[in-house]
Amino acid sequence: YLAKQHHQVVLWGHEPDAMAACAKNHINEHYLPGFTFPAHVTFTSSLPEAFKHVTNATIVLLAVPSHAFAEVTQLITPYLPEG
Image (cartoon, rainbow, N blue to C red; front, side):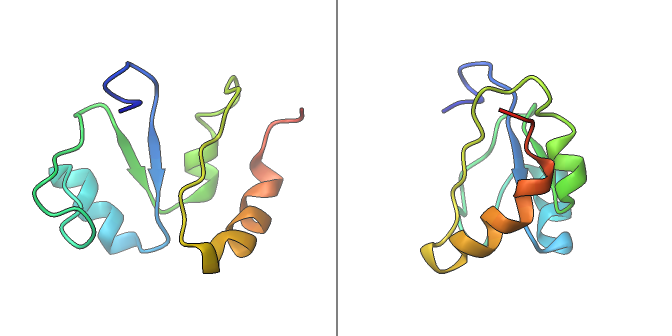
């Protein structure tokens, strides 16, 4: 939805092979088979790569399984812009 509204969207995942496949065909066969992401969505398994795009962001949307929330928030904290 955000990409269709012309927002910059970067999807990070912890599995490099899965993110490479998503970047290649813009489909996440494992979690969203049959759904095609817009062409301008960026996929990465690198947190530094993902967060280099958010220097002017006012919102970072986190969508992770509840059991991974604490771990992921700790992982991304160093990359969040101040404020």
